[in-house]
Length: 128
Image 1 (cartoon, rainbow, N blue to C red):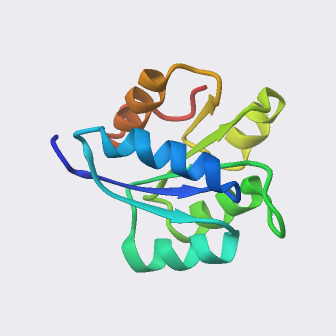
Image 2 (image 1 turned 180 degrees about the vertical axis):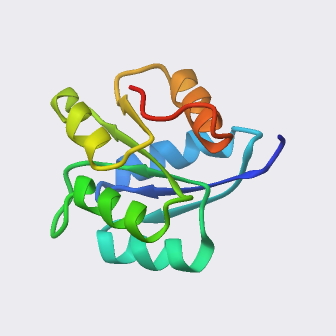
């Protein structure tokens, strides 16, 4: 599965997006990595590029990541959403919003990549 996964990073923090993009750029399974800073931009990019997986932050201005997850899943149920945040208290709410997985930022990078691959292949669903 070399270079088959298209990922959209949705986070309003530039440093977080840059770090995730740097990690994903070293991952052989990543075909395309795009970034969005707010909900409206994320929705536009999903419509335009149909990513396989969206890495979603929870705390964002205007519309939070949980609501964006609900909107994505309502409009594009085939797009997988992985909520990535340092706030573990959002795990249940993320899954109720339709997230396919929840990962804490403090987890090792390998866990994030393994989870992304599993979610993209449909092998991991509704787990944390």
